[in-house]
Every structure is written in C-alpha cells, then in structure tokens.
Amino acid sequence: GGNFFVNDKTTEWCPIIKDPIGTPVGIKPGRVVWVWNPDATSSVLKGYWWESRNNNQEVIDQMFSSGLKALTGEKNDSMAWERLFKYFNDIHNKGEIGYQHGEKIAIKINMNNCWAYGNPYTHEDNDRDASPYVVKALLRQLINIVGVAQEDIIIYDASRPIPNWFYNQVAPEFPDVHFVDAEGGATGREKVVASNKKIYFVDGTIRTLPTCVTEADYLINMPLLKMHPINNGVTLSGKNMFGTWIEPVEDIHEYHESGQIMGNPAPQVDLLAHEQIGGKTLLYIGDGTYGTLKDHKTIAKFQTYPFNNDWSNSLFFSQDPVAIDSVMFDFLNAEANPIEGSQNYLHQAAEPPASTYDPEGDELYLSKSLGVHEHWDASVDIFSPDRYSGPSQNGIDFVAIGKEYASPAVVILVPKENYLYIAGREIAPLPVTVIIGKISIEIEVNGLSEVEKVEFYIDDNLKHTDYEKPYTWLWDEASFLAHTIKVIAHYNGNTISSEIKVWKFF
Image (cartoon, rainbow, N blue to C red; front, top):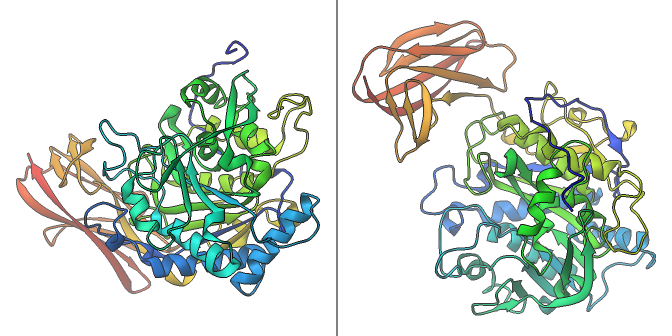
C-alpha cells in the first residue's frame, strides 16, 4: 500500500541546533562517544582501502578500548562489558546479570556493495563495506576479554554475500566464529536460514527474520559512516538493519523513499522498534574509519576540522540508536548535503506517532521513545561536550576522544585531488588533477579563530593575498602542463601551508 505517502520537493535546509526530542537511553542516557585517531588509516592508500597495509590494527584496537570505557564510565574493558551486559539484562527483566556462557551474539555488518556480476566472493574493488579491522577489534574484545566462545558469535548480513577479501582477514584469527550470509557460497560462509518470526512494516510489507537473529541473545549493530544515493540520504544504524531479513530488499525501497519525507512513517523505526532487532541490540558501533560523502560506496576525505583533508578515522559508540545516528548524521551533514528528510526517521524514532508502528504484528503499537535526537552547534569546539545539549538538558551526552591529535590546517577545497575541472566546474574523478580553463581556488582554514591573511602561490610565485573569508582566488591566466598550487595562512606570527599538484590547459 503506497497510497498514504505524501510527496515533497526537498530544499536546502538548516538543522535547528540543540533542540533535543525524545528520551535518551543507556547507562549514561544519550551518551555517544566519538573516538578519532588520524593514525587508524594511511592517508595515502596503496591498493584498496581494506588491505592490511592501509589500516593500523593496533590503533583501531586502542580506539575501541577508549570508546568502551568512555561509554560506560568504567576504568577497564572487562568492567565496561560487564556493565553493558548487566544494563541490558536488567532492562530485559533477566536481572542484573552479566554475559552467561553459551549465550549467542549476532553482529550485523554492512556488506551492501558486495554483489558482483560473476563471483561476488572473489570480486575485489574499492567500494566501502565493513572493515575487517574494526570487526576484528570487536571480536578480540568479546573473545579475549568477555570470554565468549567463538562458536557463539555470528557475523552476518542476510541480504549479501560476505566476500573473501573480508573473510580472509578475519577468519584465520577466529576460525570457529560463524559467518552467515545470503548465499553461503564459499568456504566458511553459511547460508542464512528462515525462522518463523516476522517483521510487519507499516506499509504492509511482511519480512521473515533469519534464525541467526532470532536465536541470538544479543545483537551488535555495526553501521558505517555513509551517505546513500537514494534521494541523497544517509545509511547508518537504522538502514544497516535492512540486511536482517530473508526476502529481497527491493520491495521496501518505496517505503524507504517515502520515509524520507518529514512526518511520514519510516522503515528504520519498524526495525529499531522490533523486539528481535532493535530490542535485542546490546551496542551500536559506528565504523567511520573511511566515510563516504557522494554515495554509499566511494570513500572520501573529510575537509572540516579536525580531519583536514584526511579519511574520517573515527569510531562511534552508543547504546542509543537515535543518538548515535544523530551524531553520525551531523558529521556527514558538515561535509555533504543530506536532505532534511533523511533524518525524518530519527524524529519518528525519538517521538513515535501513536498507533503507527507494530513491527511484531501483535497489535501492541510502539508508544515509547527509542532514543534522543538533536543536531549539534557547529560554532562550539568539536571536542567539547557542549557541542550538544548534554544530560542536563536531556540531550545527547557527547564525549569526544582524540583532541591531542588535532592541529590547525589550511585545506584546499577547490580543486579537489584527482578530479577533472572544466571552466571551473567539477566534472569527474581522474587519476590526477586536471584543470581546463579558469578556476576559482577555494580555501578553508581549520582550527584557528584568528587568521591574518592567506597567500596563493603558483609554482612559488605569489599571485594573490586574501585578508578575509571566504579565501578564494580566480586563476584565469592561460597556462599549460604541470603546476603546483600552494596556499599559506598566516596567524600570530606562524604559518601553515598546503599544496596540490595539478595539470592545467588553457
């Protein structure tokens, strides 16, 4: 039934800042921990992003530990997990008990881009899917710290294959962990099995849940920090659960699109509200080691402070699905331009309308808030808890880790590395940066409140000095072949610089 959907043309919008809605959940209600460490990945990649040489497992493991401790307020990893399990079991009326031997944990990873013409198991590309290194950091914690038996852990995506490039990085260290996917078409991959449990979506679609989910005692939801090409939306914790049913995903896409209109029901809420899905989720871990900004597969460098033209190198931790998706949304919104309606599901989840969501089909409608939603105040330091309203205002309790690695930088926004520009317009990605005709060079200075001036150089010749924002210079002189654009920002007697090599014609 698609007929109750309204259509609405999207326009540019500015989020209302620090206006929390919904009820924060978790040990520290509404807490979201953002851990940033620029050493998590190599800024210059060799080969594909998922190769081990481009990822620092030791740093990712440390980030994981820091995030867990900050999320729970505990001083070591073991106590942090104990606290998470006790909280979960307590609110599920099992008593305040920790993890019990033999209980099963299912981990939802995002393999959305893994469907290839030919053999999807052996296919390799640079599309962004689950990181084997972030998953390994989680497995090391569960197996080595919590003491979960390997065979009681299931890594799954019910809608996609789990390819060899991922499996081969993870399985050797943990040979008894189960890998469950859509096809079970390669060594160690088990085909997903239908249970007798269903999810009833608001639009009338009914889907079957897999046994790896219904037989699990706990779920861990591991979304990626990604934009999504459907109407320029986002794909975070809510959308990650689209890989949690047996039948094809396509039938739900119409509902997904209508859910991007403010005020409409949204399928992410059916999923987060379902007792077998959101109801079973112990922890949300956002993998932002490499974010995407144009679509859901192409990794992109982030330009804002503190990223300064590097990969996003971030992990996010929360027990509140609405809060973690709100924070990851704000990080994407600072760099890209998701439509207003792409965060409609967060409004719906924070304040569910009456008699709308009945995902179990038992006529017991969702009536309580699933978490807290708000948007940050970008004028506050990104490492400050005051970026959000905080616990005193029933808002997001934001904890940022990694300030010691942050430094000011001058970032060249235009031209971007490895793009073709014609008459100043960005046309397409290329192996090198090519400029045909004139171009307006655009600069951002990150992490400094006072900037004296910005100088623009071509091949060490000063061409222009700009004393106020926005820092731009129109390079319109005819020139040919290889050149270096260099920009220098002056502040308090210091300078920072940045440069890019380009090919220019005319």
